[in-house]
Length: 113
Image 1: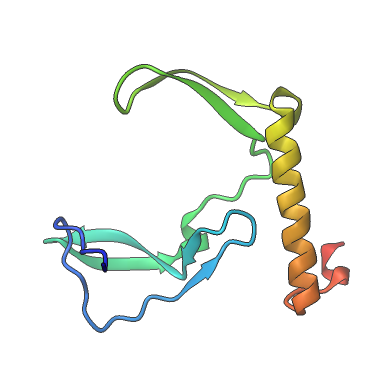
Image 2: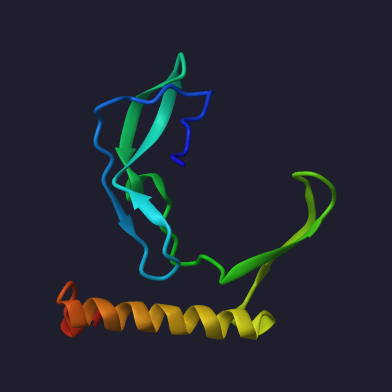
């Protein structure tokens, strides 16, 4: 059964949405991201990765405590040693993703610095 469009927004029929699969997590990443909605329709878009802030000082992760529906307390950042099993799994996925892209010719070893 096909998914139904969200009742909050009307689908833009005939508009092609281009996405790529993340080689680490498998989620699809759209080429464009809606940035503004007027009367339930997308009116403004921008390149997806331009809409995400890149930070060299981004921490490894975060932890928080559930405090009810859609509510969390005790937010704090994590270093890899704070969550070693998660770090090991994510590290291996990143390595496997890079190896796969090299094997497929989508990136070159020399690009990795």
